[in-house]
Length: 228
Image (cartoon, rainbow, N blue to C red; front, side):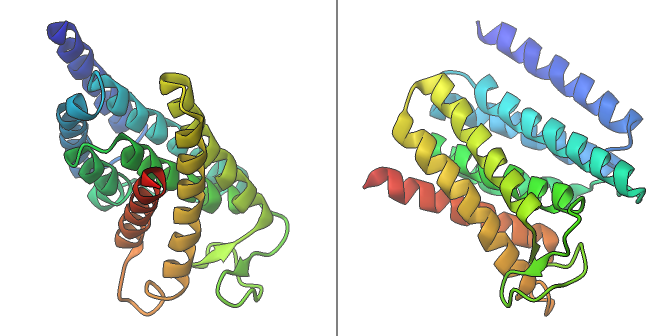
């Protein structure tokens, strides 16, 4: 059985790498980093789940949805789509990987829920016809401003967090975990916006570290709530 899983893993990584290179979704170092993260998630995921393929394919699903939404939003806005790098990979998956190291399925799903919610909030939010507001002051700011939120982006973020929570429910039939993962993912997205409007604005953190910290907070919140 493990031989089949390893075969599926490496085949998926090869296909992922080729598509990422062809579509210019990641630079060369980003592709290498994504492969390393994928291998580590599979390895540590074996202890947290019955198979390492569950967390591996969840992270692949996250990237596929995030990349698709980014491309769609940039196409409609007719703006350039930046090639993702190592920082983007680690910022969005680092906290989830750490959760697996500590054998925390809830923490892993919550971190991914936060990463997806934040990405959807940022990218889909750019399509809002209403000028966004800064989360700390609620004053109108230009689209794309760090810490800016919109009704469209926030609603889409909620759906993203709910999606990851729903996947956990479908896999493990745990309604409590579904609610906690969904809440933690949305909470992490809001925390990301607050950090963006404050610490990132003054240069203490960059976008990748803000993502990492926010996803980490989402994972911690989920673990604590689940333990109550």
